[in-house]
Image (tube, rainbow over all chains, first blue to last red; front, side):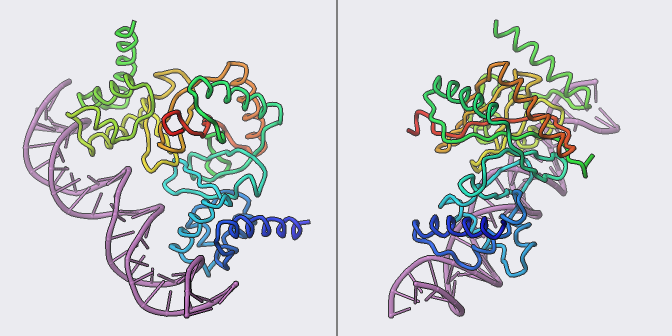
Length: 148
Length: 148
DNA sequence: TTGCTTGCAAATGATTTGCACTGCT
DNA sequence: AGCAGTGCAAATCATTTGCAAGCAA
């Protein structure tokens, strides 16, 4: 059930922060809680909006820390605002449907087989450039229901 | 040979601009030429740097126009600068190897079969969200040779 | 001579940072 | 106590924009 998942997320975040010498402060807890409950990438503004106790600059500063220690990932879309989501250490690997109209993002996953052949092809392509791959990102760009 | 390719690119750009009521000015020609000859996504700064006659604000302004008419695509990476490349109407569909160190980008292509199963999966995933897909982007994030 | 373009300088706005204060540990 | 964290206000800096001059149809 949800509370169990949350607890394990909390523990992971706490240890990722702790190992790097950071505290799991109240503000950080609230940011993680917001990202977790919303379940999709949020802009700084959206995070602040969703929780009265939060302040712009503190959220910006904490997102940087949370990214450093591997709790969140910064996404840059064509929208003017950066968005943040929990890393795939915390939630499962997935991809994005990005709305070109409003910038909204929905998550989705690929069949394991497709994901595999993708990884294989990426590794192959990268080796030509002597490029070492850490990660990949795949986004579909289109128009969401509300914008159609 | 190269000059033939260039000529057809020029014609395409000219008609894309012309159809939208824009001129294929000298500055625009130079920007397209730079993107074409470099063969990888460039930042505004890199474009200006590569051609003394170009001015920052004009390049910014023209890249917006060129994007509007479908000649270039704006890429947002985690680097602090946006990058631009010719659209796949002008050059062939491809993907990116993005260096997390220096932000440099190399192009690569996937086998047609992989690209196909990818498209199929994307369409399937999108239909669940009633999301209409225009395009997709796939990037591999890693470290390039020079940064290793 | 109309109106798209351009260069220069000034404005914009998301994000970052300085600083004094709070609150863990 | 000592130092990470925070809120507020001011600073940054990539990008945008106003404006007067340039250039093509």
